[in-house]
Length: 258
Length: 258
Image 1 (tube, chains in turn purple, brown):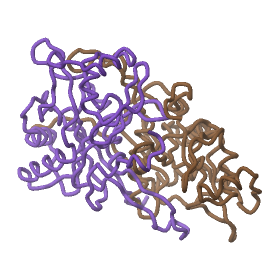
Image 2: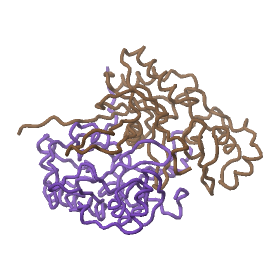
Image 3: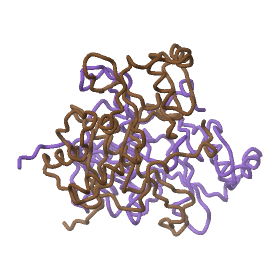
Image 4: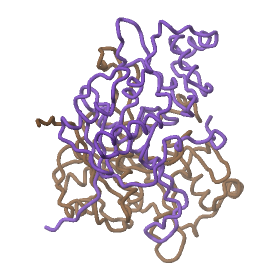
């Protein structure tokens, strides 16, 4: 039987990453992990890195004992059923509250993400000593992605695309999906407007959230690893004009749902 | 150098599918396509199939010339800047209008999806003769997925998981992403609540929209094929309790954004 070459994608978990601490060199850790699994980076590869390890490396861990909740945080905390100190951190990371209800605090993050709890996370956070800690998003995830890309290129001689992903809930649908909060060296959006379809009719509106689809694909593998897998290599994506993940944010004036 | 086996996923476009027509046997077409690329189905494989070819095979193509717009459709059409006959089809497929604005008509589809235009699509639709046609979603995509799974199992002796995907816009974010509108033989949600994280702390809420992430991953490959690729094989996913895509719909009473 003759076979036809078909487009394909390969996703591989980067194994054996240690628990990341503030100041760690993520580029070195990722390249060590790739080396252990015998993977040499190639041009066109994209590395998807979980927000948690980027935040940890950047020292975004906050000791809850040092947080003094404001009056607003203390007022909101019983309504949303959360620790007032956590609510204080969420408000500090946010432009405004979009929805507050029992167990739900959805905000517009200072960077524009509409998300639960401003991405402030208490799970899987390495706590030095016995205290309670929370982890904030990176200060500027697109900048984090650019720095990581440059650091890997300097060491490996190949600049992979970088996507920093996190898990977001959605309006209307149950369950979180991986979403791109930072990107470098990848087209965050793919604009197919004006491309004729198979019948020569021009597609009317098709702008694809490409980096979000990459983030979701990697999340499949991150979620099914027994011990957690904070980095995934994606091979086989087509290239396109580089854009940061910030282009995935719908401007509030064009948004019908906040 | 010793290497460690790392979890991995493989996605392959199913090549050479013909334009699908009403009554076509999708199971046969997909198995032919897989055969041409030398892929033998294995237990645990998931086939992601674009909504368009499922709808076409099920005869969901509508001749716009036969559509008589209601008064409500004629009233709404100039507001949303769409053909009144298309608006009529959208309303006929919907429970209610969620948002209407210039170029935007977001509805709650009769199956519960909150989506633009009730999924009614004018692009890439094979038009017999010179008329204008539109394509509606399958009547019951979860049932379509179950039938396709059974038909493939009957022919191939292996029952792959099936995800029927479509591209949805999102609140708050620019760009469409692949979403699961039908599923069979896969866990549409993965419930990680109660799973201890790396530090033994119990994760508080982590329900993952697994089938949506599968749909998004396949959409990456569907979008980058030069000639369109309406089916993708995914290999390497872990299994779990089977659930239909309907479980991905947030009940309206629990939804803060309708």
